[in-house]
Image (cartoon, rainbow over all chains, first blue to last red; front, side):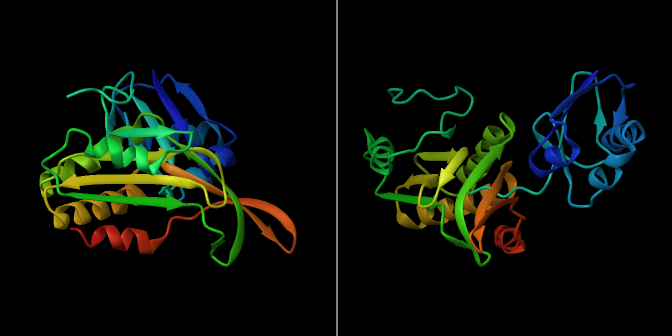
Length: 82
Length: 164
C-alpha cells in the first residue's frame, strides 16, 4: 500500500487531494502514474503534463524512482512560494 | 543555550505558520546571548499590489506539510556548509494573506557581513524554487474579482542556477 497526495492546481484539476493505492511493490513512480491514468483516463493530460513534479517521502525524485510499501508519493506543479 | 521559542524539534530554525511575525522580535532572538556575530542580515517578503500587470487583492498560500520544513532545512544546511554562519531563522506564512502583509522572513547572523548577505540571498533564492509552496492570486480586473494559481517564473530558476 502506498499513499498518493496532490497539491495546488493539480489537486483542483483532479478533484482529489489524497488516495491510497494497493499496488505491487516494487513499482516506479512512472508505473504509479500509468496505473492512475488507467483507473482515471481523464487524468491523463493533467498527470502527464511535463511540468508536474514528483516527490517520495518528502524528497523530489525522478520517474524511475522505485517505491516500496508505505511510501508517500506526491505530485505537484512547480513551486511558487517566497 | 535556552530554547526561546516553541518549534518543531527536527527543524528548530524553520517555522511555517498562519500568524504574522514581528521582525524586531526575530532580530532580538537572533542576537540574544550571541556576542560572536557582528552581522545580522534579514529579508522580508510581502504581498505586493502589482504582479504581472494585475491588480492583486490578496493571496492564498498552500504548502506540503513536512516536505516544506525538510526542504528549507536542507537549504539552510547547504548554506551552513558554504559560509561561516551563526544563527539562521526562516519563517513562511501560509493561508490567506492581504495586500502589504508579510509572507516570508529570512534572518542570518555571521561574524562578518559578507557571509550573512550571501547566505541570506542563497536561502531565499532556493526557497523560491525548491520549497513546496503554491500561491493562488486573487485579482481585480475591470472591477471583477477572479483567482488563479501563479505560474513558476523562469527568472527565479535562473537566479538559483547562478549559485551552482
